[in-house]
Image 1 (cartoon, one colour):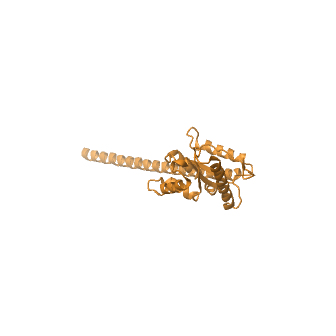
Image 2: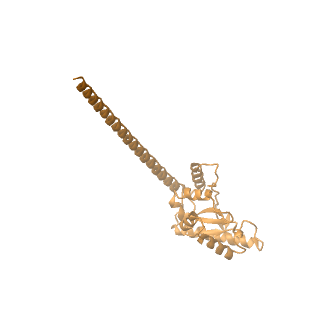
Image 3: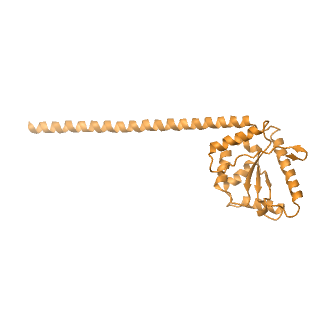
Length: 224
């Protein structure tokens, strides 16, 4: 698409909340989406509904992304259904901020906003009644400004598929190391348990042997 005279490529990444795919499949599709941006991406928009309650699936999405901390400087939140927060953008922002400050607001959502440095865009999912054309043009400029700000904040460094694969490889190595450590710990515990059991058997055998000797001696004394 063209934004303010500049060609922009928008790539639809997989829905991390889709429960019919595994976490590994999500990450594979995410990497494939990055391949479509040959040189890399300027910014990544995470879509969350402002209308519905923050779900466990969305929390799971954040948990998956948290495995790649180098992603956060590139991420902003796109809150859809902004019209559910108020009749105009000022009211919508105030309502959103108020909701985030409430004690009942999920800690994971607050943590998410901190990780992205409170970068977000509000978007009404129903057609604005006043001036739709003006609204869409304004949101297009806002999206372009957000993308540019993130690009500049990252010192004009794009997030590439190579960086994602490097991070994924590191994560896999960490998980394998963790699994190996847990396996070794389990093996050590198993050996320890076996040692304890063998010691108990040996001690029991010694006691039984001593008891038999004692009983034999007592029997011999009675015969004498």
